[in-house]
Length: 305
Image (tube, rainbow, N blue to C red):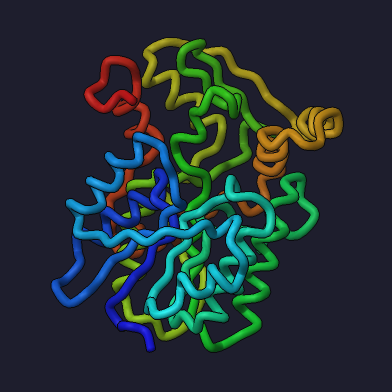
């Protein structure tokens, strides 16, 4: 029997910690919050453990990627709400394993790792083959009625748009590249805002399952380039990486994960949605858009990281 006020967050990386912090900020004396971490001898782990302790977050250990499905199920059993913040880096098969474990454990409410694009719209067989497993998870959850579930679709993490390795924006070099075309759009939300909104979803009364859409910003690559120019105060170099070019590059390196992502986002399907229909917009919740993110992360700003 699950404690109605118990929540387990799987993982405490960038997103997991943001979710934990938001949940801890609104936790009541009768509720409990637990983080499931992978065993680690990393000396930096102590800082995280101290932070979780200060938030009154209990810690349990297990490896959802390496452990058996039965072992993972036992780790999840007894919690009223389970939130998976373990992403694709955990390896193939992990997402469906955790979802099955949640159902086997009889978890009343489950939020899977689907913090990203609209996999239903993208469909199977996309350039990023990891996305097919996300559809397997959705099929599994939709095929049962025992566990209520919420999928939080956030678009791309805002910071990822500016990762030099991703190749879209290079702030140091003053370059912006459009994926697909300048009119292709992308929805982005920063992890801190995802954490806040996910905590709000958890605190609501769930009467049904479904998909929740967030949007810190929905922006075309043309508008993105304009925002970068405004933030830098100078003209930047602009280039278009067409769908054909990106697919050709992927054929040359079929296992290159970054090239898989570029090709998916260039196609433009399921990677953006109107801000007006988002969870945050309907509730009047202020979010950080791309322009605000740039102001806070340019060299010399107080929030520069």
